[in-house]
Image (tube, rainbow, N blue to C red; front, side, top):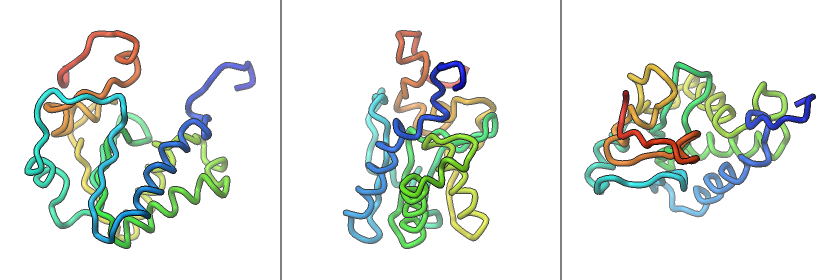
Length: 170
């Protein structure tokens, strides 16, 4: 920022760690494997079973399950489910390439969520199948409105600083 203040929306370096962790892991897994990204500041409140994951994430039709939002112009990327098919690997190649090439600096924001959302919407416009796990979310708390909100808590924003935890939408 011109005044020297920090703005996470312009901190590409901070968020490339997540981008590279996701994309590098995906390239090391067998074709058609399933992979879940879950931010490290998330904890479970109830058991998360294989059956639950199958039911929520892997319906056979979609390649990615994500937490899109309408209250802001980028997704919540604390939890993303990937079916590592050719379409998903193409998306992830674009995701990593956008940061490696510096293309992200042509966007209005440079963080992982903004870039991921732009690429998801582009790929979806060309037939990519993605499942929005937070369709009914009226605000920014996509994680809490998803099926995972009952079983996990993502300590986002003020929650990391000791604010009271919520167990779901309020």
